[in-house]
Length: 70
Image 1 (spheres, one colour):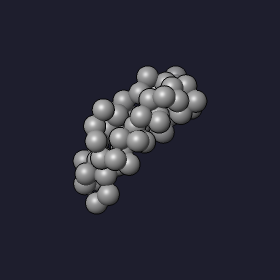
Image 2: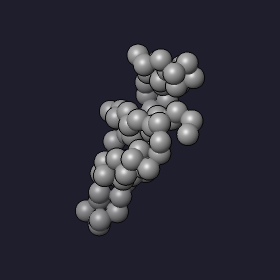
Image 3: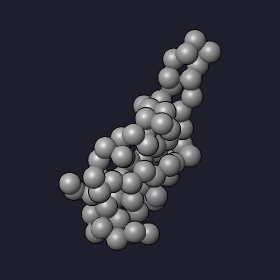
Image 4: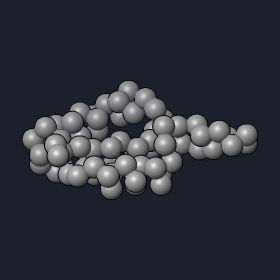
C-alpha cells in the first residue's frame, strides 16, 4: 500500500517479435492497476533513465519520498 511510481521507458518489438524493453504500455497499465497507490510516469528514454535524465529521476524520487506531486 506504499506509494509507488512506475517509470516506463521506451520499448519496441523487434522484427522477430521479441520485446525490447521491460514491458509494453499495456503491461505497464496493468501493473499500475494492480498496485494500490501507484501511478505511471512515462519517460522518453531507454533503460538508463536515471542516467539520461538525472534531474527528473531525482525529482520523482523526492516526490515519492515526500508524497508531494511536482
